Length: 391
Ligand code: FES
Ligand SMILES: [Fe+2]
Image (cartoon, rainbow, N blue to C red):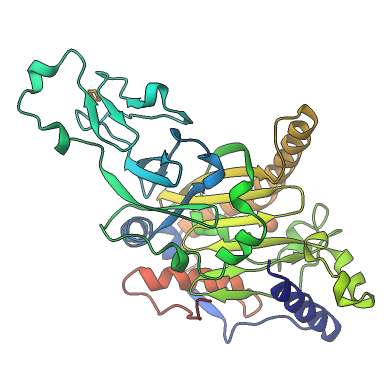
C-alpha cells in the first residue's frame, strides 16, 4: 500500500475500534436465493460477467521468460496465456484450429518455441500462428495458414497482473480494470514476486458463496472461533472501493498496539492481512511472508472451480523456503476448505431446496455487498452497482 493510504487506514481502524463502530453500507442488501441456484442466472453470469469483462488470469511473474505459458478456463473457455516477447503477454483460445485439441496443458515453457497439439501435431508459434501441419500438407492444401492461427483473445499486463477477456476486439484498459488496486500492487513490487504453487479444487456450491467468505470478517468470531479469532479482529471492517474493486485489510489483534506508537512507526503489514478484491472474481490476500491469489468460477450454479496460487517476494528455490511455504499453503487451504467452504456446500444444499427465497447482507457486511453490487453492474436486469473514482 502507498504510505498515506496505509496511515489513513490505520487511523480509521483505530478510531472505529475506540468508538465501537465499523464501516457500514447505507442499507441492508436483500438477494434472491435464485442468484445461487438458477441455471439461467449462472448462464447470464458466464456470458455477461466472465466472457465480457477482463478477468485476472495469472501474475506476470509466472510468465517470466519468453515461451512461458499457463493454461486456465475462463467462463468455460479453455485459454492459454504465454509470454510472446519480453514486453508482451498474449492470450489464445486453447483449441487447435484443426479439430479442437488442446495445444497446451498445465504450465511450462513451449518446447522448440512452438505449441504442439497432441492429436495430429499441428504446431503454433507463441504468437499463435499456424507454423506446421506435419504429414498432412496435402490433406489441407486449400488451408491458408495465415488465417488458421490460434484465436487470439484480448490480453493486458499491468502492475504484475495479467488480464484476459474472452469476447470483444477492443484492447483491455488494464488501469481501469485494476482501478484502485494497481498502485498497491506496484508498491509491494508484485512483478518481481516468485510463483510457488497453484492448486485447483472443486466445491459443491456457487462461486459467490465461496468468495463472499473472504469479503466479511463478521463471521470470524463464530466460524473461526478457534483457528483465526484468537489472532484477528472480527470487526471493525474498514475498506476502500473503486468501481467494484475493494481493499480491505483484516487486522491482527496486535494492531491495537499502534495506538501508543508514533505514526512514523506504523507498519500495517506487520499487523494485518491485506486483501484486495479485483472484480469480478479474484481475491488477493497479502501477508509479509507470502501472497495468495484466489480465482472462482461456477460452470453450473452449484459447483465451483477454485484456482489458488501462492507467491513469495523472495526466491522459492531453497528447501527451507519451500517447506515453509508448503506448510503455509496447507494451513490456508485447511481453514478455507474445512471451515469456510464446507459450510458453503451445506448452505448451497439448503438454498437448492427452495425453502429460503432470499438472503440478506447486513450493513456491516459492506464489502460483501460491494461484491454483489459489482456483479449487478454487469448482469442485465439487476440493480446499479456502487460507483467511485478511479485514481
Ligand atoms: S486436433 Fe490438433 S492437430 Fe488435429
Ligand atoms: Fe472465513
